Image (tube, rainbow, N blue to C red):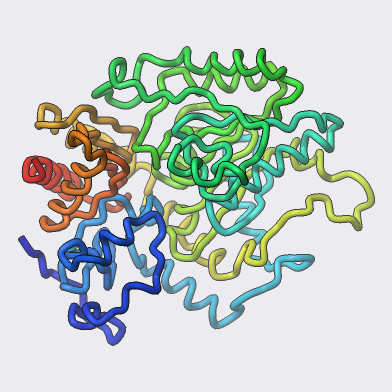
Length: 460
């Protein structure tokens, strides 16, 4: 099955013949099976992207693919939204790069104000960086420096969570809990990090719709870690409100509220990693609002400007910011930052994205589409080798039984079968993840689920 519906060609569109002439060896692909992809052209069928528009990609074979994960959770407003594209073009006519150290631009100050206004009450300050990984490392440094500034420098320990994903910086993989991200780099990870147990329990939670009823007690494991290490040594707990990269692991009912209670009780900062959940995926600006739990720091990236230009950041409460604002006012308060913090092009794209979110009523659209997605994916229950289905707002996952002795291969086969049928899914292990664009139609989401059904059957 080949879908050749395509947008108008441009001079920059690369065709199939051009892609076949590419030297694939120099590019070391990230988080990819490089040998599998490069060694056999069959493994690359429909996997060389040429163009994108709206909720679709077109490959170099002119094959149309529905983007079932919004890029990598970042292009919720659809690809090449004209408002965002025009905003970046206009910015290039005015200012390309403005140094961020000791200087500012009007746009970045205004953007910080808009993001703070969208955040939960009490969050008044935004620190910009360029990715989710940088945002996590920034938040960890803020937590350490905050406790030091208030006379509790002995609070140096971080608590992450098993199966958690917090980017690929050494700080992020230290608090993260994915074995594949940790085992190779153990020598470089932060000392004094511990982990809460994960909340992924198929026996108790399989086929839950939304937040599972079982599992809130798992938050009480923080009390055990406090007893083990003493609260006075712990700086912060960091979790994803909804875990995307591990395969849409949804928090149990009451779990996040209990974590908040325990962190408050013991003077520990709570960091929400909202790189995936921020700016629309949850039908709210942030998952903190959706779950009605207020952390102390929020990380963001991806959706802030629809993935158009790399950008990330940390939103901090007024009390945390004010703690740093001491000493001579001509001195730097926080020795941290990046060359590209608040880059002018990223800022322009973010302003346009926030405009589109408001004008196109994205949050209500996501809330409506979430019900469609839930019904569509849970309709796959009973298909062969489907052992779990999970959903949380506009995110969902189908977990497959692994092939004996070949974990991950079944999901790859489903992924490739779906490509033939015109849908690009995301797989991690034997989990197929979905995060449709916010501008998808109910019909597109329904079709996506039916393609997944066909692909599961075809993969065997």
